[in-house]
Image (cartoon, rainbow, N blue to C red; front, side, top):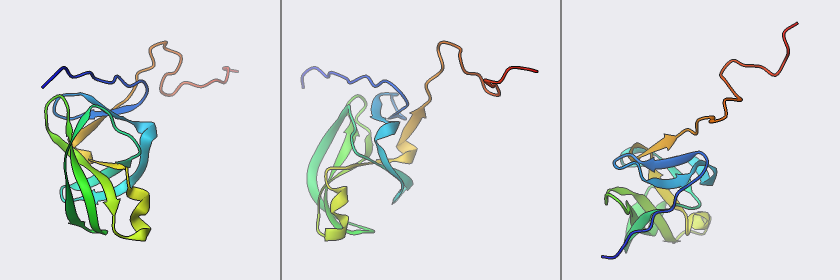
Length: 127
């Protein structure tokens, strides 16, 4: 199979729920309003540390699309799909984009390592 090289992400990110592998940056979310058969999903402009399955035609809520399922490169779990081509001119914005099913990923919140910000703190001085 070969050696797998993983991309580390800096900043708020999403990880595979099953093995904690980095898969996407929060800044790359284009939409949080997608739906899939298992519930909610997010549309991303870019994802990392994935492998793609074969192209297939799939009838979805928004019409017929050519898609590739995408899998975590570490544990092999399916995470969502990539839109390869769309057959409706109003759906062209999806081409080349990735959908991650929300229940298959977890959001990693970056901790403030320098201690500058604390919940409930204020920049105002006390009178």
